[in-house]
Length: 78
Image (cartoon, rainbow, N blue to C red; front, side):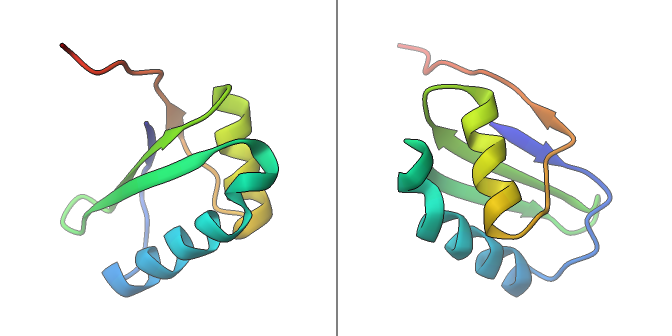
């Protein structure tokens, strides 16, 4: 999961950025699953599956250039 801080974008703009991620994700072996926006805090959270944190970041770089401030490797609690 990655975190973008101090984002000055509307929910609609975040949705558009997520759609651009989805358009290029296959080239990097990544699947962007969902994004969330906290407009009050100016934060965006993106959940993706992929071979590495770096692959997820490459998708953002290629799709729109808005790279994350933090990337956390998370696992589903079962």
